Amino acid sequence: MKFIMHYHIRRSPTDDAQNVKLAENLQQAFSAWTPPEGMQVEQILVQVDGRGGFAIVETEDEATITMVVSQFQPWFDWDVHLVQDVMQHGVGLGAGTAWARETTG
Image (cartoon, rainbow, N blue to C red; front, top):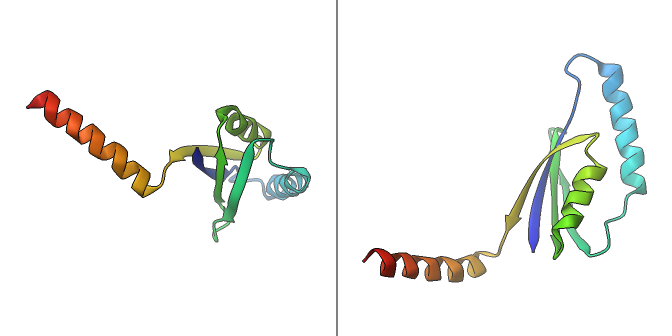
């Protein structure tokens, strides 16, 4: 399964020193991080405004998503989306539409 994990960096709106410490701690944690077994990381992207970014990952075990979210919970808020290839989606969409048509007449 493919996921897009959108992370939003938590920042203090009033404490610049705290934000610097947060950035230092995040950099230290990320430099020590490796993806959990069973997760393939396709890309990690950073928004140019510095407020967050995206990780595009594949895994067959949703628990690995929970693990990564938990590892970076001190620094990030997350939106995690299960996604699929458009061609694969079209097959399911066609079958679902056919069922709805048959069911409702």
